Length: 277
Image (cartoon, rainbow, N blue to C red; front, side, top):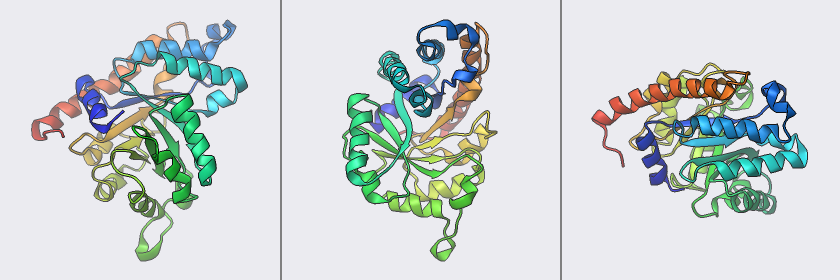
């Protein structure tokens, strides 16, 4: 999916919501556990309930890989029912030497046909560039993550007092463009978004941390929006586990709708003063 197509979907749906499909078996509604494929059925109902409210789905691979072959089958079946106009992100956090990264890219882009994959930048350019060789596909590079451990390394000062996450973002822009490279920037660091936008004014940002992790949507939008909107704000647990009974999908829809309505208000106000594209 091209950048313009993604932006058009955002404007059409008045939403930049990404729903994380993280089907933790220990939290699935108990009535689903009797089924042959509870993960797929859980995902199916979540997708049916939210597909008109979001522009992206982000399966976290750990919740599928942990189930072995059946988990991969659940993932494949899930991808088959996601509408073609919805952006799909493999939250895989891959990144290895070049020939290994190329095989990861083939797995997620050719075999599973994801639109994007999250990639860890620690091993540098030759671990990232193989993912960027696939036309129409996206790398979403970890820059400033939403977890508590982000403080361990990502703020470590480099030359001239520059934190490591800023160096990562600047360097990565010599590998890819705003047409095939996004950055993960956590909602739990809203005070950094003005600086992030200074460094990467045209790139999309995937923003985890809204909802269960305590991130603030209005603060993210205040500093993170650009003329093409430029945000995919993710919520996983806050939506998919909003309920745990037979009405879990209805509860998930209500949670997603609450976020989408906030986004619609933001976009309406934003577009009064900004001409997209």
